[in-house]
Image (cartoon, rainbow, N blue to C red; front, top):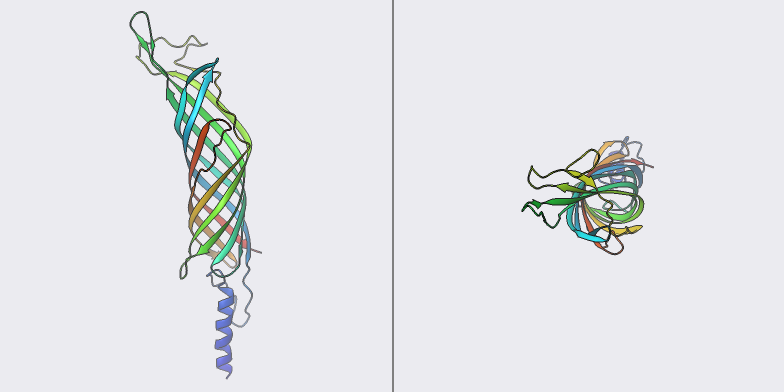
Length: 252
């Protein structure tokens, strides 16, 4: 009878303590409830692909449209999870996001009287940061620590800076710009459409929950951010985000 009681106690305690698939049992004789609320620190590396049609204007002259660009950024902040059962959790995070990008467009050739041709390109480098708030949900694949998840990022513009350059790419005998000192590139007073102060971006995630202590686990994951809205007010600028990161969680 006593042996049967111990076996039943063990089975019940393990079922409670494995709420997230982890065996956090201190002792079979001293079962403890597994936490369902977790907070942690999150960080990820982002590869950004920019697509759109951003018209560059300088001195009321349309210099062309930026079509594609790319950049490498990062995201860091705090995150949390609330497990409703052993397979499903609601997620939430507050993050700082740095999103750079670089675009180029070739200018129209300028023909000289002596028969030469001036070939230049315009380069647009942007540095943008956002505050990201992301509620979401994740689902543990039964029988594993793998999960799939989805969230909706609300981005609030924090800072925005950009530089426009014109760069000579023609013959090496082409004289430089008459800057001080002379150079084969110059800063231009160009502008594009104003950025929106808020953007929305759904994200899809695939991750793995890995325990590293009692009531603690790490979640490395990969994700894709899908553009649904323009980043600018009057031009087309959409951004795909491909990310790889990790979050460290502690039970409350």
